[in-house]
Image (cartoon, rainbow, N blue to C red; front, side):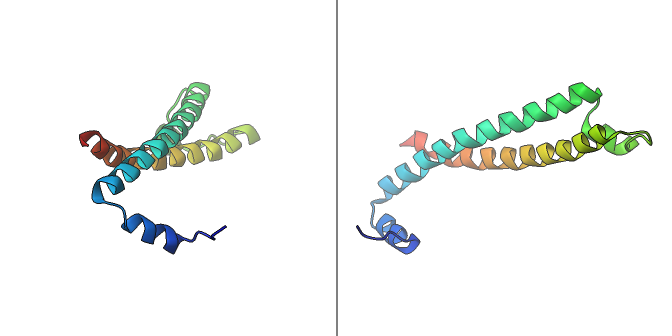
Length: 108
């Protein structure tokens, strides 16, 4: 069995006709888009959980700061809230990028 490397894949890919390259890229982007939309859904669900739990948006918590009597759970949630906010932002960007690539395949 031949060992496939990035160089091998790239050279084989470059030999494809342009229409097939576009097909491979757009369909691959569509598959990735599905995965990133799932990640975005999860991140937004986690953010909504914290917003419901604390009756506030993270930006409002940031403005006010954590209460002096904040317990361990609030501190832990605050860290996770930031994590999921960052994850959602990254996922939104990736979804947007992949949508524009996958959308090109609809024209073929």
